Image (cartoon, rainbow, N blue to C red):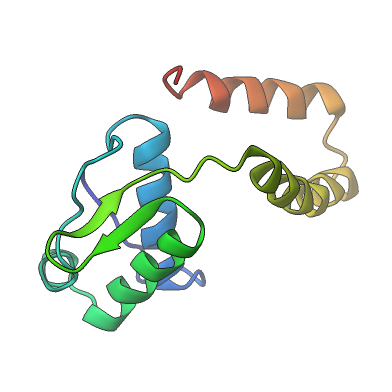
Length: 124
């Protein structure tokens, strides 16, 4: 998996890294049981601080996308809590939809966008 960090972005580096790993899981580039690179190796590969990678891995663990094993490192391990995921998604979507409404984005444009994005993921 190729990780691309935008050092000019206002988005925190650990969030960019977290988001790319989640996208990798959603598109099946990363699968359940895959071992992510060590904190040291990934930091070196993409040119960021080890603490930044560690924070991204920690957030991914808290969100149920990886487990941390002291010997093997970070492992893709999906914690399937659909109700919690739906609740979190609704909170995030509420703000995104409000922003879209303020910019005169129509319901159909949003539906089309969601369909296009969702179709980009493999069926699980």
